[in-house]
Length: 543
Image (cartoon, rainbow, N blue to C red; front, side, top):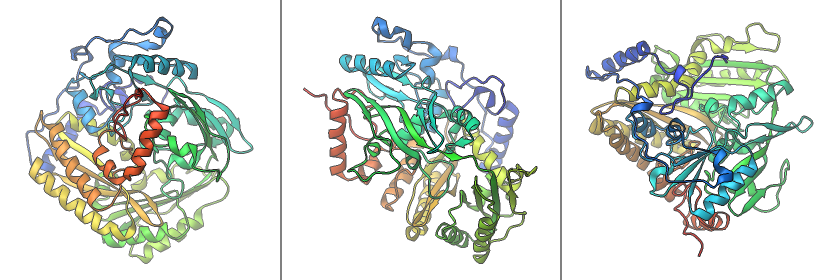
């Protein structure tokens, strides 16, 4: 990673310096004009911080807390939204009417306690904020009229303790992905959790949203890496015992994993680590028939090989993201190990894929610790897909500037239901895009696979009417979400619930569980100040 200075974008994804250049944006616009057969796509200039309106803060913190609090214009703008399509459209349009009144920057856990104590006594809403990469309305406190504070945890960014014998570390929750790996690298260790938002998300955010990461099989979610957690709630501190496993009643960690900041603020966790991989292998398998490609992916996922990477891209996704111009569907398979070569597993996986009609036009990449060609796996279709994957959010922001809807729907279902789900989502999305946007296209890839089912990730692109992007996005979002619900698929596999997925999550989870969760919130957050409206309805303050 370059050492050059980067500036976090206050309205869009990532760093300002890494956004598409004017020439790149115009090139993208030309391609979309051709694809949509429209010549009215105009790339508008990015907003200026000086031109947006932010109302004065309504809060005056007590004297001891003032050093932690910021009412800086840029700071408040950056913390107003997450980074979903809806968020970026509003930020690009200069709508910061729901900006936090203050941004709190605690330097340690005691500061978190102090902030929660004040806000509980004063009835001030608090929204925990890690990297702010939520794409489901999870960090947006401005949807209610009350004053609110964005609690930025990124100063809690240390690896406090490393247990090399047990291969685990005690880590502060505000650490960003790159900082975490930088602190583990000298010890030859890695968490090996790389969501697309890796550079701009925190350990606490991953835990609070049950993030999905690098591994496409077996250890797919951050849940699988947790030994114990420490959480500050308005009612006190909850810390689970650090154990490799336990059957002692319901898991305390499971209560807070995925709770999205409604029960407490995660301040640190003991995490299971791994030795850094030394041997890697990867292959790109092409298929002419999509059903055969799906069957091959299922066979690999059920083989017991447990590949690190096992992602299936349909032909359009393969063309757009991996440069596969032949019209083939693309299965990307990869293995890695810190202990032994992985040439045999990749050969067997490719053999399974070939048994289902797959072909491998490029050489299988196999590298070891002393291999000078260790970067070979980043060439060809595999490397092209990886680079496009990392850069996709920046391209999305460029499309916002030209009033193009770019949205994703990620879910999971069982293998026996995938065919019906894929057909239903594709049909409804194409119909919705035609009716709402006048056209567009939809693609599908598997981000993770399990022996009992895949996690499909649908992406759509469509032209929108300038000024109506959010309303049109809402219609498309609702239409596809209704299909997911009707098909019995989950409303989210790894993006969390937030506020945007609430209607469908409410149908998915049992009502009795919702009542139990509400009771837990009433116990841990009796004043109902923590991230109200996320996951469950705001609890009524205790009398």
